[in-house]
Amino acid sequence: MIRIEIDEDRCVGCLECVDVCPTGVIINKNNKPFVENAERCIGCLSCSYVCRADAIKHEGIHVEEKIVKSVYIEEKIERFV
Image 1 (cartoon, rainbow, N blue to C red):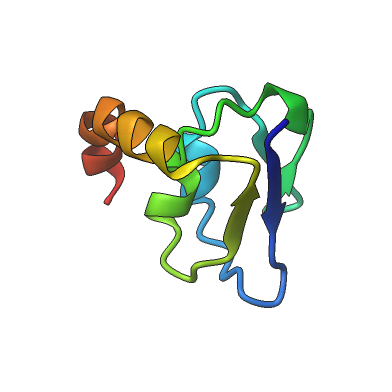
Image 2: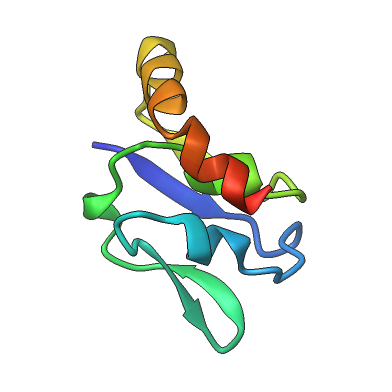
């Protein structure tokens, strides 16, 4: 299972992670990103790539999966960077 965590101390509240999350795991709650239904996270790492503050961490993803998924979503991410 993939675990996703947002470091509230590092987060600057830009909400780009909310916009790029394809499964709606990261939502806007009171103008801050909030992880809801984390079990739906597919580990695409879109949120991590757009996070300028490096406030989003994932656990349970192997390096090979990151490479494959990052290639797959590269076009989507470029729209938000």
